[in-house]
Image (cartoon, rainbow, N blue to C red; front, top):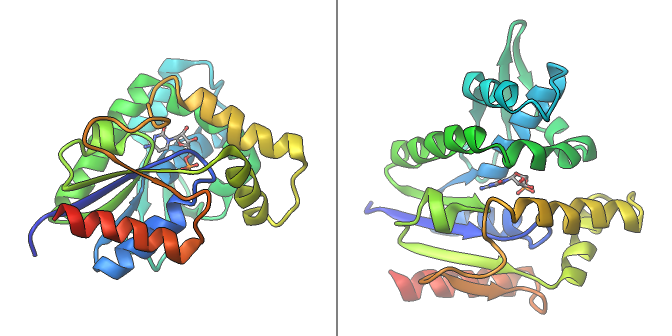
Length: 224
Ligand code: C5P
């Protein structure tokens, strides 16, 4: 088929991942979760016991990371190859300790350079038929995407969704740290709070899941 890159950015708790996966299924496109790549680097740094403030060491970890991730919207799998073989980190990268560490890794410009390069290569390897989600996809990784969407939601809606996603196990302070404080840190290197020129905003605050899918598919069909 002809190229169709759907770039979706948004803050944490915007519903980006579940929406992006469903859009990929509906359009029969591959799916790339770029946040999982930053999380895998953070996991590896913690595994190696690196000081996250040591920028050169963190960058070297990213450049050397042997990472394999599923690009099917139906299979969530992230593997890291280490000295003792492959480790399945699919569940581990979602732990709060990773969410707490990931911004320190993602604000390292060497790490970003490496992951952006890999993300572009993955999009190319899929014949440019892919839904790609993250924080800098519409502005950096796939500025040339056929469709670019910023998926937003009010802070209240995002806190509620992330809380439900984590099974109601987190305190209000923990949720605030994982959603609002993380976005504030991430905003220093990627701009995802306002849509760049040519990027469509879908505000999901008052939409349920199906309505959000319909809104995103509406933008796709209007654009291509
Ligand atoms: O989307 P998710 O919450 O899994 O992303 C984890 C982290 O990865 C973000 O908090 C951000 O620090 C980083 N990230 C990024 N650029 C992207 C995707 C994620 O900096 N394109």
